[in-house]
Length: 263
Image 1 (cartoon, rainbow, N blue to C red):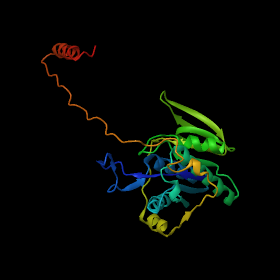
Image 2 (tube, rainbow, N blue to C red):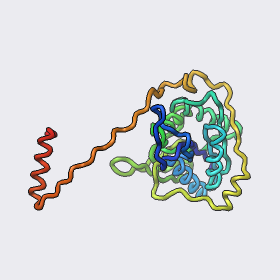
Image 3 (cartoon, one colour):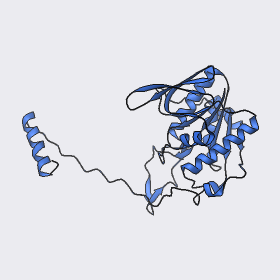
Image 4 (cartoon, helix red, strand yellow):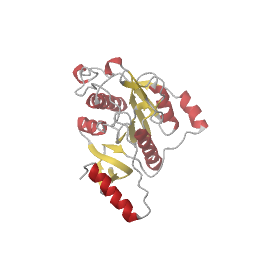
């Protein structure tokens, strides 16, 4: 199987972000692979191990993104490709999808075959828009299934377990297709020292995409622009009700809500 995983490098969300000039101060925050993309890569790796094949990892970024791509190579990726172009910075989700889709087309032209399946995380932890996977599938004209937690294939038909608000669905789509991955019932693997050393020696291929429509990429081509940032309101401390009897606690709670004009 010919597999591609789209990944994004994001600020480490395990570290508290402070504000500077009314914007998140990311200068001292480390960069990591987006969490949902690590689930996508782990699922792709398990799928590769069960069905044979190779995984190409594709990302848009600058020189610092190479570290994240090396980490992807250490946990299952066979090839890493980086699209690094200053004019692509500050693209919105549609611009990002347009860039990735055209990058995928160029890789497929170079390889002489299409990717059988393209994995994306369901959303990024920095903007949480959840649009890129769907937009890539629309641009490429391929089948699309969201929020999957498992995948299998038989006779070039993919069977996908999809998580929904009501439970789980089993969806099927033809090859080639695009899927987005939510958190499955397992965690991404950690790289071994041997695989880390091997990944360090592996190259990061640079991909240049000619003839991109400048009206679709970068800040000027973005349909969605960030105007300002606001911190979420701080939660007020709750009210503790500690009456001796449950009945008295209930009555007091109702009295407090009535005074606050909740009802």
